[in-house]
Length: 200
Image 1 (cartoon, rainbow, N blue to C red):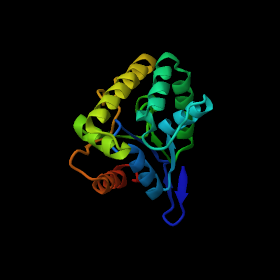
Image 2: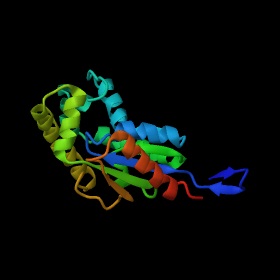
Image 3: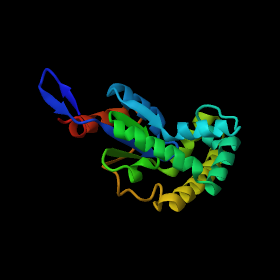
Image 4: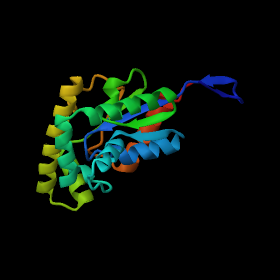
């Protein structure tokens, strides 16, 4: 709890979760939302990249998960849950501190409480965005997305029993981003957060 001295009001710590499949813009959006609301931002994907780097993988920037190195580490995670369990434990610890934003595929299911947002987009739209971002053909983007998402779903189904991208029960708000640009998505989410999360 924190106190707004000018209003004499006690404010509850904010815990936001933003989730969505690759190509929905969740990571970029998470950073912008966290900055606007003065939240610490923690990314499950970034934490997994650090573990991959520790294991000797050559980790690069955005789009790494769709690269051969990223897909190789993903395949290793399918057979060894230690990496995902370690990251999820760390994110749950951050959530307890409050005033955080978690960019994660697992936290909406594992975390009690918090405000959970799912960004939705069609497969073709997401593939087109990934192709543009990673400078590959649309067909290549479709292939790597299918492989990545099949493996990722298998990991979380085995570990936690939920179906990523198919089970929306934990979410407080779902936004279809197909016909919205990044600024429009940001504006919509800010209105939602202002009217729900940031209410004393």
